[in-house]
Image (cartoon, rainbow, N blue to C red):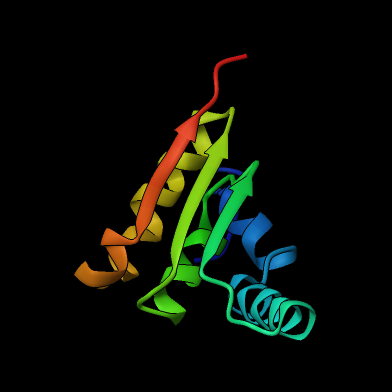
Length: 103
């Protein structure tokens, strides 16, 4: 979808410009394995926004779990509408939906 002044989606634009959740999940797993000598199983993502990384984390490995935290409900809602549908039922059970921290 082409963004125009009437259809601009800041979360989609941010994802295209800044995020690489699949590559980030691979990178984190590789670095953890190199440093710890074992597989990473749990991801806690502070300021998770749309929690795209959490979703990629659980998609990549059925034994992994992810927890997201954020203070802004808008990107969490966006992630719920746009990323959860890509998860299998098994992956979904390993994702703790993001918690909105009240400050």
